[in-house]
Length: 168
Image (cartoon, rainbow, N blue to C red; front, side, top):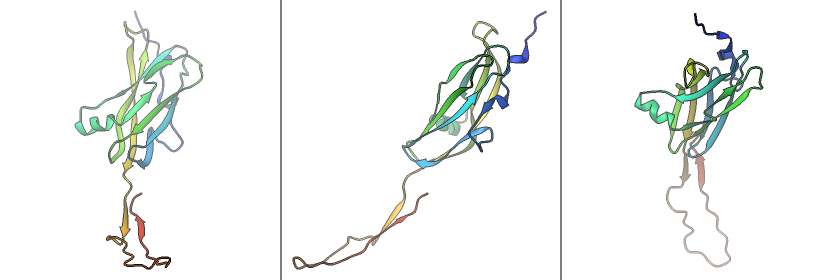
């Protein structure tokens, strides 16, 4: 008779996110080409070694495009019993405007290293990702050139123009 000991399981509660994040990572709003980093920590509370591997998973073309904006470091690793928590960084960088809200495209696979030759996936913990990237938006008034007209040397003249912020 063979059995699997389930004590090593990384439970969702053993994966912690920044304060206020409910099972996901929110990068907020940032400028296009800026990079943002969020962290989550993983802790093995069991008695046996387990592995983890972050994967992006989706067949939807829209979600596929979103997956290319994120990177995980380290993408995989080992968690030993009663060891200190491991920190994983998820990095977001976009080259165009986008708005991603609670997309479940990132999964943390929990791996039993002694199951089969390569180890076996025993759980998939979904991680929702949210991020928004925008270009700066502004308006300048007047729209035409600021014209000072003919002027005498050493005479001061003032003209005004306004810059309005239309972005976030």
